[in-house]
Length: 124
Image (cartoon, rainbow, N blue to C red):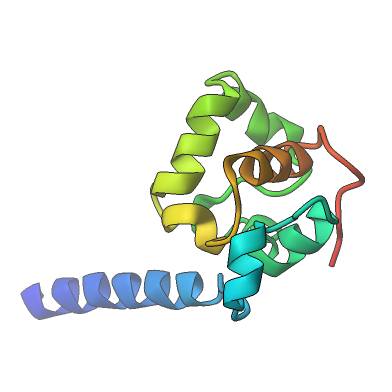
């Protein structure tokens, strides 16, 4: 019985790791890192490259893009807190949300987009 319990725990951890592995980013060149993620460009493209794989499906408890009810209590904490959580990581979300080239402004724009306050919600 003890073995079964440990085996199930191990399986749950492995499943969580596999889910997070799906939340990945394309390789970014050094020039792109220096310019910032959006560099005045299209934040929806940045979203599709970095946030989409987790926030579109809600993997690991990520609030789904466009789900205003899920985002409302988070937005109440304030944008500074949300940006800090994105930069430092929060629960299942890794530090910087795997957007290593995003500035604080980029994170704020991405959060607004996902919360339904930004441009049209991208669908992939």
